[in-house]
Image 1: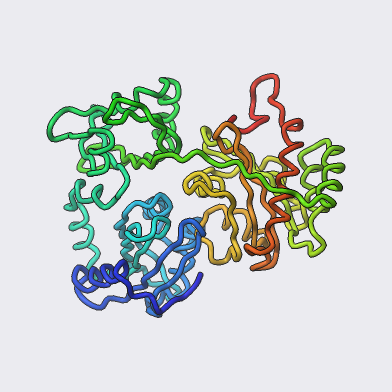
Image 2 (image 1 turned 60 degrees about the vertical axis):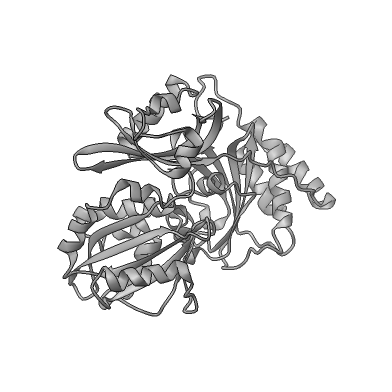
Length: 432
């Protein structure tokens, strides 16, 4: 968490105007900006909400920490806010929070993608206890067309019952020829390049988890099919169940090629070659790191995007009690960030500033304050992520990670022989 009082540019001015014009004056509010690529949150002024001084920053960072503060009936709604922010969707939600003084308050969260920076999200939190009923009523009047036009990338709204596209923003009209007002546009035509089994799996996931992220082959206006990173979520409005689809043209991920320092690589390679388990491989990396020994732990995350999970095995004292292949959700993971932003690595200098769920679920509880993660792709699919963690904040920086990227590359040469697929086709490997 950071504080910055010097930001007053246009993306933030419109939130200040909303605060004064739509909320009826100077209500207690806190303005913030989240960097979704670095997973850090910055507070843009020194305002506070009386009674909730310590609660709001923690709520914005850690969705799992809401259970003891947010009203039980509003927990699902609050979780939806975190999901919308992570997916860079506009949000306007009202929920109840009990402050340190025991008083239950109504809070309004407004947020939207920063129009100037792709990975940035801006918002405010306001105490609107007196105005809660009016805000809730007004929220139902906002038009779908206005929502989707906020995005520069293609966005569609689809009626689940009929599979018809009911709303398309300008980018979707130009890219896919979606013109709901002029002709009947069906989701089936758009998705015709995908197998029935693949689509059935997506629909099943939407039924139970209400959201899905992944690659879909979409029919362009020209008739050709092109892969797009697609985010889908369910949306209830006026008694109708809708699907929200947000698409981004998929860039082919880049394999990381790092030249390893010869002396270190030779020693590590010998130990890796003798390893008979994933833990043995990770131990070799932990022991083979440079003399400064920045890392206190090394993790291997195996990525199962189609199943919505990642499985983590770790070595090192901070994580010594952790079992092999401990399962975490893919949503909110390091892997999801890598896929969404096509990253060559992930560097987090201080996890206490993070808004990423995996940091609060795994790293922070085990004392990991800084980490460096290296992804590995096979046939364009993210399969594994190697993560070096330190118990010291700012231990990893852009100037000292090259040797660790080299260590990760050493692991990749030996990993396939220890992750061969089982005879039953079970999850011995990731999604390859």
